[in-house]
Image (tube, rainbow, N blue to C red; front, side):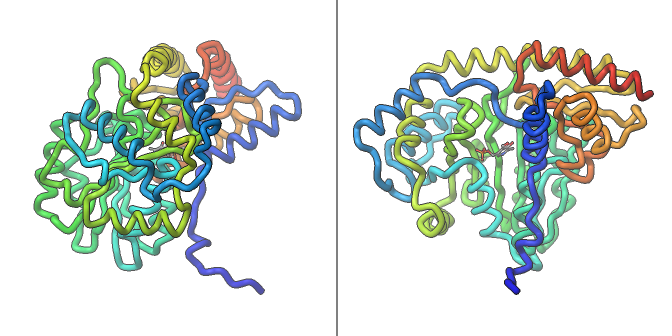
Length: 391
Ligand code: PLP
């Protein structure tokens, strides 16, 4: 009998991928499925970025790069960071990673072990908890509440820190709620963290420019007092519609940088060179496509909120960021997972149940509005019909 270590029994999943697989199976069987399940922009990567990758291949960029990433790509990240946040960072603090997830993995591996506690948002991106459990550390959910606009509460977050806490994971703008934590709350949180100098912070800012209604994202990088224990996760996947390119970056404090570099050497050597060169074109090139994409997301956001609020028993807060809505379905009489699976099987609308994002996700479903207005309207017609018929 093969004997694997028990840590692998504790690895979780991202159910959005299982929903996608089932939706594809149903489509393959001839059903007309509308997919509001997966968290990826439905747009193509802007053409100038694709052209940069093609040219890089033609120019012979076929080999390894430094494990930390090409200097030019790291410099581009430093330029973008400065132009967005006003904070000067050294390109030597930037790691180019194969997506946003490897940063999560590296940071959680660095601080997680049996006996340690790691705080993470609930509801939140499911991989945080999965990776914490993999390391044997205790996952401590930080409640993200609808009545708080799906923002972090500084007071509640700080109250959960113990002498075993090693890492605090923050995410704003957030998946799955679309919540954006206001600057005043982050100010309070950072002030409180001064009492806990041994707690590291992983700030997942992958949706940083995806905000609406003039909402502004506050980067944790703008707080110099925590820079020596702050890891910032970011990447190309969402902003430039590049999920399949596997391109992310992260910014690390000096004392952790050598460790993550070694992990990269051991695990993936480097991100492929053409993607890294395309990543420079994404940052430095025209941003009209990003703007157009955000305008489309904004129209869809308004449509989803309006249509969700018209559903029997459903209320839907207006998301302030990312491209997800998190309607409250607790008054429909349905449990979240039962409803999402019935909607997929019977109405052929793919959504993800709130509990796939944490304990506090019960009573909610996540709608990804990375789909056309026409498809969103069709999906909402079907959900309305389904809820009316099963009332
Ligand atoms: N962080 C959050 C909050 C996300 O929602 C996602 C993707 O859905 C990621 C990180 C991972 O991004 P990537 O596809 O670049 O690994």
